[in-house]
Image 1 (spheres, rainbow, N blue to C red):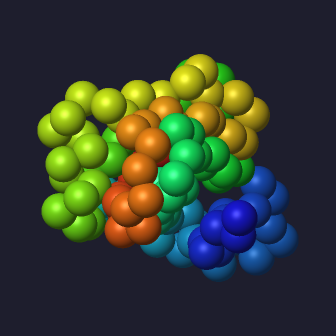
Image 2 (image 1 turned 30 degrees about the vertical axis):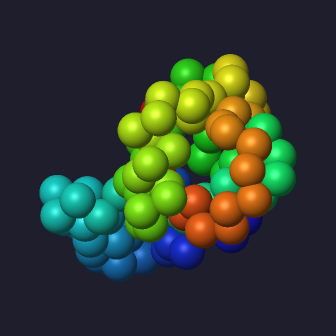
Length: 110
């Protein structure tokens, strides 16, 4: 997965430019632009899906926002739950059905 961001370098010879990048990064955080989101569509005809994102770690929490009625129903049914997050991946367990539109927006925290 490619993360669309312009990271602030740890060191920079141009001090005014470095400070401007730091200010932009902090201001974006304060505006809620955390750069920690993505999309997930559950695998049809399977009881689990794999979410791969380099921001996932062993202490991560994944928050889901359903984008379709079938995705919302999956959450409401209580059949969706996560395995233990690993380094860049987590297994998403869910109902095994043929629906191809169980799509979510997700956020990785931690």
